[in-house]
Image (cartoon, rainbow, N blue to C red):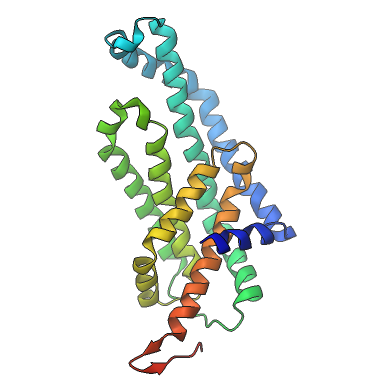
Length: 246
């Protein structure tokens, strides 16, 4: 996983990758910036109103101005949701328009002999993204009780976005080269590492400036990692015989 991240950092400066770093994130910022411009203050006021009663009954609120504390928390919560929204939107745009270019770049440079079995498709990619979004909603609803514990507020959206990231990127990384059976084997065998890469993207999204480039960097890492594992899977001996990459 670390090697793949280093590989991604070295390849991110390629001119084709630099352009992919910029335009999906700018498009996502335009969409969510417009939404924030229209709804941010109204939503923040609504959240603050519901929080005020809880803060007033809290022992921690003895020295706080209730209205100011509620407003501060409301804006912090909106930031926690705004950043994943931007990154996820950029990721979906990148998956639809940028991942084929990135896969061709990595495969051409590092895995030119790896056979393309085309187990994925455009329809499959769209359906996978829909499932990822539904999973995000389900995880968000399931985690509602945890939002009552303030120390977990920053961690919950990052953990959920980490799962969504890997769900989207792993399919796009292998769609051109792996068949459906190979996809299932690799996703199951490397679940922890894939989530680690997805979680890294979720964390980097909150780092100023760096977050703008994170989707492409981690996307390249996913491609390199999974194509490497796919090549190793095909080269592994089966029933005493070695298979070849064809």
